[in-house]
Image (cartoon, rainbow over all chains, first blue to last red; front, top):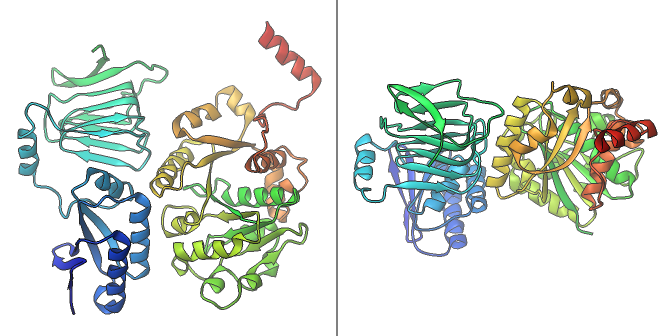
Length: 225
Length: 266
C-alpha cells in the first residue's frame, strides 16, 4: 500500500495514525485523502486519526465537514496539530485535541522562561460558553463573559473583561503570585496554585474585583488598577 | 420557491422542542405557507404523535436515505392543513443511520417545493444534533427558565457557533408570569443576559399545551390559548413581521391597562 502520496503522509504513532498534509489546495488534498481511505477500507476501519496541518488555516466549517466525512468512512478524527493558533482554537471549539500527548511539565517551564520581557499570554476575544475549556501555560485574557460550565486553566494569571461565572484556575503549575481579575467576579469555583476559594459568588454586586493569595488564603479585593 | 430551513434544538431534553416544531409548523401553514417538518429524532420519534399523524406512517427518513422509497412517498400530508407535510423519523433505527450530508441532500431536494423546512432535533450534542443542524439556515434554541436548561442552551449555542450556523435565536418556553413577578422563576432578562442571543419569542406556561399535545391537535391551530397565540407570534416574526413582545402581559383589559398607566405615570 502506498502510504506516501505527495499530498499527505501517513505514519503510525502511539496514539493511532498521524497524517501530515503536504502542499496543494485543500479541496484537492481532502479529496485525495478521502479517496485513499475509501480504497483501503480494511486498513482504516475504526482508525483514530491525528491530522498535522502545519501552517494551513482552517475554518470551523471545514474541520467539521472533514470530521463528518471521516466518520462516515468509519474513521474518527481526534486531533489537529497546527502551527496556527487560530486553527488550534477552532479545533478546540470542535472538541478536538491539539497535542498528541499531554505536554511534559519541563516544556511548560521552559516556554515560560523564554518569555521574559513580554510574558506569554493568549487573547480570547469572545464569550466562553458552557463546555468550553481554555488551557494555556501563560496568562489568559478574555474579552467577553465566562459562563457557568466554562473552564479556564492558566499557568499564569487570568483577566476577564466581562462576567466571570465559570471555573477558573490561575497559577495551575504552582505559581502563587498569579491573580484572577474580572469586571464581575462570580466564579463557580476559583483556584490559585493549590488553593481553592469557595463562596466567591456575590450576587447583585457588579464591580471589578481581583482575587489573589494573601497570607496563605485566596482573597478577593476591589480592583483598583 | 426556495425554502428556509429552520432547526429547533435545545441540548436538554423535555424543554419543548417537538411541541415548538409542531406549533410553529402549524402556525406557518395556517398562514398559507407551504411547510414540511422533518423529525430528526431517529429512534425516539414523536413529532408524528404531537401532530396527530402517527397512524399514517408508512415510510420514514431512513427509508428515503437508504433508497427504499421516493421522497414523496414518505411525506405525510396533514388532515387539517393542506400545505403541511411531515417526514417522520424511523423508530427502530438509531441516529447513525443518517449522516449530516444525507440531511443536507434531503433538504436540498425539498427546497424548491416549500417555503419552510422545520427540523425537530433530538436532545444531546452528538450525531443526531449534528444531523439536525447540518442543513439549517436558521437555528432556534428552545429553553425553559431553569438553571439546568439554560446551562445546556448555553452549551448548544456555543456548538452552533463553532459549526458556523449561528447566531442562534432563542425561544423561552413555559414561563410562568406570576412566578417571575414573585421572583421565584428566572426572569427572561436573566436568561438573555447569560445567553446573549436574540429572543424571538416567549411561550407562557399553559395547560392547554399538554391537553393539545395528547390529542395531537397543536394549540397554534386555533390560537385561542395564550401559548397558541405566542406560537403564532413567533411564526409571524419568522416571516419578518414586527410583532410586539407582550406574551407575558396580563390579559389586556382596560382596567389593567389603566392601572399600568397610573403606576408608571405616578
